[in-house]
Amino acid sequence: MRILVLARDNVDAARVRSALPGDDLADAEVLVVAPAEQESKLRFWMSDADDAIADAAGRAQETAAGLEAEGAHARTETGEADPVVAVRDALATFPADRILVFGDEELAQQVRSAVDVEVTAAR
Image (cartoon, rainbow, N blue to C red; front, side, top):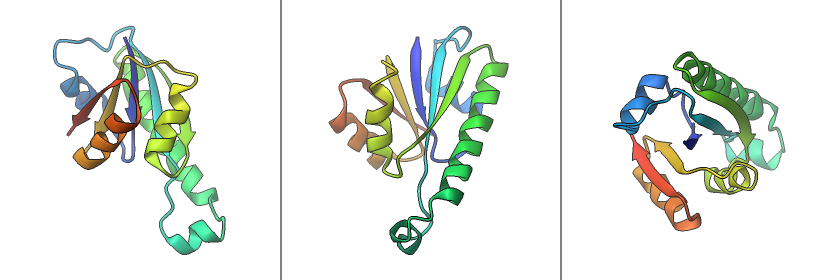
């Protein structure tokens, strides 16, 4: 199974497992995409993305490490600030079977509308 995890926050392996009832993470291929979202519009307009990129990379690495401890083959990608664009970009090189969006049903619906992959809103 190929799973794309959209991580706007830290997501531990237990949360991923609970979003995939009946599926095992062992040997799953997982791409953790962490959007580099800006804290403020001023920082966005000033193109001061370094902090956002560093935060996203750390979030993705922490999530991937937890998934690897569960037997998944995980890699990370720091995505565009817009989570939907980040998912689309990731799908260009990672043909996921399923996308997990944590904590935001509205965002999950936006992703569903933008891609042709099963999207699960998870807690």
